[in-house]
Image 1 (cartoon, rainbow, N blue to C red):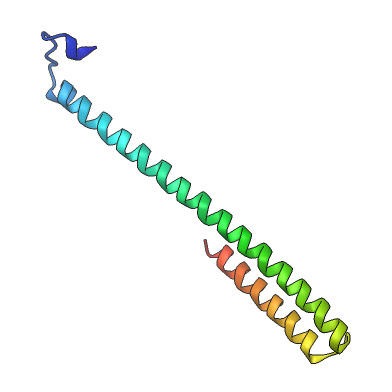
Image 2 (image 1 turned 180 degrees about the vertical axis):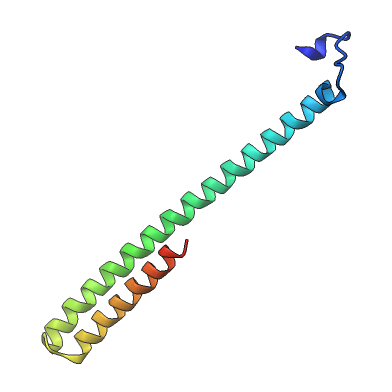
Length: 98
């Protein structure tokens, strides 16, 4: 609108059409950067959730297999449970540091 008014001359140069365009362009650029960062965050979060479920399912199946092959009191089963506990502790430690 102001571009169509050749007589627009603000008393303060900080309100000039060029300054307004500059700040508008910076705003649009920052909004685009934010949208890209948010999309990257969503993709990373989806990948983390998929990896978490894959790990969980694998641990569960490994425990079932170790139980069937070695029994409920076997060192093999305890080792798998230990892997699961250590992974959960690491995840909790990483999550609380964010």
